Structures are given as C-alpha cells and as structure tokens.
Image (cartoon, rainbow, N blue to C red; front, side, top):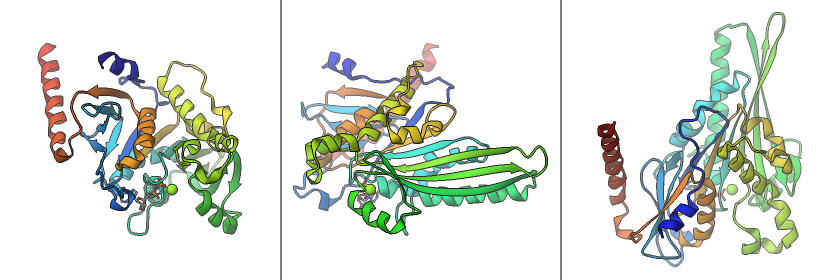
Amino acid sequence: TADMAQRVAVNDGAPGSKRTSRVRVAVRLRPYMDKQDEKGEGSCVRGLGPQKLEIINWRNATETLQYQFDMFHGEQTTQQEVFLTSVKPVLPHILNGQNASVFAYGPTGAGKTHTMLGSQEQPGIIPRAVKEVFKLVEAQETEQDGWEYAIGMSYLEIYNEKVLDLFLNRTTASTKLNQRSSRSHAILLIKVVKSQRGPPHRQQTGKLYLVDLAGSEDNRRTGNQGIRLKESGAINLSLFTLSKVVDALNAGAGGRVPYRDSKLTRLLQDSLGGSAHSVMITNIAPEYRYYFDTFSALNFAAKSKQIVNRPFVRETVLAPTIAPGKRAREEQEARGSGE
Ligand code: ADP
Ligand code: MG
C-alpha cells in the first residue's frame, strides 16, 4: 500500500511559487440527494477540513483515499462563500487589462450549473460576477481617473468542436442547450474596455471567461444517448485538452502547453495560464452511483493523494473534521520547535 500511495502522488504544485500561471483548483461537494440514490447507500465522500476530503477505496474497503486541493467547499458551503473565496478576488484585475477564467468541471448532476448560474433564490457565480463587475466599473467612474469604461458580453457554446453564438441564435440555442448541455461547453465572456479620455487615448481590455463545462463522465462508458464512439471522442476533445493544459500549467516545468489542440483552449488561451488568473471548480456528488466519475474528477483535480488505512465509517460524518485540525496544529508545533 505504501508504494502505491507514492506511485499515485501527483503534482505537488510548488507551494512557494510566485508564478501566477498556476490554475487554482477548488473542489465543491454538493449535498447528498435521496432521489439520486435509490439504493439508500449514503455518501461515499466527505470533507476533512478546508483543503481535504476522503473517499472510500473501492479496491479495499478497509482503506480510504484522501485528497488535497487548493480549496475544498463542503456541502454546507453557500453560493456567496464560493463567490467570495474563488471569484471575487480576481475581478479587480479585469479593470486593469488583465484576464481571468473560472471553470466548473465535473460529471453531469454534480452541480456545475448550480455553481455557475444557480437559481433566482441561490444565484451562482455568473450573476454575482456580472453585478460585481458593474459595481467596480461604477466605482472607478466616480473616481474621475481619466479613463472611460465599457462592458461587453458574449455567450458562446462549443459543441462537437464548433462554436455557436448563443446571443445571436437565442431560440435554437435554448432548446439545443437543454438537449445537450451535458455534452457542450457554455461560455460567458465579460469584457471590460478601458479608454483614456485624453491623448494618447490608450486602451486596455480585460477579459473574464465563466465556463460551465461539458460533463466529465466517460460518454463511451455510459453510452450517452447512443452517440457513436467516434463522436463521443470529438465531443470531449476540448475537455480532454483542457485537462492536459491545466496539468502542463500546474506542473510548471516550462513544457509545451497544448492550447492549440482544441477549440476551447484556443479560445481561452490568453485567459488561462500566462499572466491570467484561473480557477477551476471541480464539482462532485456524494452518492455511490457517481463513484467512478468522482474518482476520475478527483484524480484530475488533486494536488496530492494518500491512501489511509482506515475504513470509511458512515456514522462519523462530523467527527473527522476535528482530527485534521488537531493534526495540523501538531504539525505546526512540531515544525516550530524543530527550527
Ligand atoms: P450539472 O450542471 O453538473 O449537471 P446541476 O447544477 O444541474 O449539475 O445540479 C444537479 C442538481 O443538484 C440540481 O437539481 C441542482 O439544483 C442540485 N445542486 C447542485 N449543487 C447543489 C448545491 N450546492 N446545493 C443544493 N443543490 C445543489
Ligand atoms: Mg449543467
């Protein structure tokens, strides 16, 4: 087990690094939903503090797999908290000619659209970000700083490696979006153009991409509406390339970043890595029926993974949150006394 744990440890992400090109990765676990779990098996995932979670090990029920991320949002996390921690801090950069992107990644049914769009009662990242960008621009304009601001938006869909403008094709778009939202990427672009009122009339453009990605589930395995093998490969080319781009950026070895291999990554190239601020929110669901999709989403998102010798006990849902805090304190003390 020990060598296995070592073998699977991935991407330690150079913690002290000042480079801005890393994609920050957050994981959001949605609440357990009875109607998603006819067998009543309960959850197979649970949080262990602000950066960690654990999932049952399907290979060996006496072990759990623990994962660490830049941030973990448990099932109690509100839309407001997700926005405040993962999105709001990057918005001022858009007014200074810098770019940013926020992605929701994960299997269909895990909460991507809830996170990005939300509902009237629980607005998600998109309505909150739009409101905040307008607020920031208004605040700048009252400053009379010699610049004029304009805000523009576009709404695009990438399906089967084709880009469709949803603002121009609204009627077809809405039906199409409902039919195939799990297989297409929905992209809202907010652009802030800043122009100097006087000479030399300089101009700066900042772009923010908010992306509700296609479902990360394996279409070939789930036999998604009878689409042929070849097609499901093409549908997921953008998603597959995105994962390679994120891996390349976060490995940070200065290797080739394959932006040009798909429509999505080509479109987002200047808002992903480089000097841009990028956040990926991996949405996961706690029910057993999502287990393999959760497992593969976590393996993509994790900074590190560890196999721990203890069974996943359902009765202790609240207890484990105490242990990691205590452990972290002990580690801190140990480090403090060692130096
Ligand atoms: P996806 O877009 O990934 O397919 P959805 O956003 O449509 O998933 O979420 C699936 C269901 O779960 C929806 O009914 C949604 O309202 C609900 N849901 C998702 N995340 C949460 C959450 N954090 N809190 C409450 N309900 C949620
Ligand atoms: Mg959705």
